[in-house]
Image 1 (cartoon, helix red, strand yellow):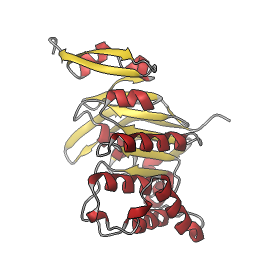
Image 2 (spheres, helix red, strand yellow; image 1 turned 60 degrees about the vertical axis):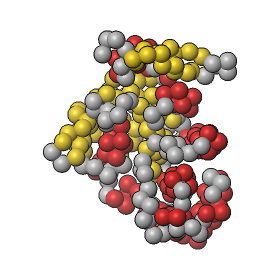
Image 3 (cartoon, helix red, strand yellow; image 1 turned 90 degrees about the vertical axis):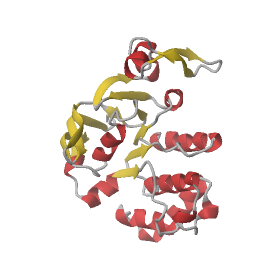
Length: 260
């Protein structure tokens, strides 16, 4: 049996009277892989992610197998999709552990007797068990980000959507988080991750989707999609795209492009 794909066709979304994404169609997003959404500021990356997660009104089609995720009820969507926002409000009154229990309740996890076990396990995997009883508003930015990631994966959704999950983290925690996401998708799930650092995206993503002004610019494996020509056109910089001594793709910015 072929793995289920996420297909996005002619999707439009925005805020009130300000359209951001207009009629965008993406290549199929495959299970078992990390797909990175990249592009300059205001390209529409977060808007696309929020529309797919049901947090913004959207028109078009977004199919997960035979399911139209744009037409799911909030409860059904919470079962299917784990969403991590770009930032978590500091004033959130729940403790980290209470936030996980709430996420499990919203996702209608089948066995409530295992809620405590699931919550404890994910805190341990992320290395944040020591802050389980801390209120969210007392956490540092990096701690809140890890707690938010824990909420997004605790119910083990099939679709994981993460908006800049490593932006407030140090190097070690960045690596640990992406390792967890990598292990997560190996079980036949999908992860769509908004990232700004192209070298980081090339290191972790199986495929990248490059957006510009609400449209699809290019897509494919990092070595195919991330090119000096694309970087000059989309980002306005002259770059070298090279392999490091370990074989990973690196983007080195030399100067602002003269052609933009």
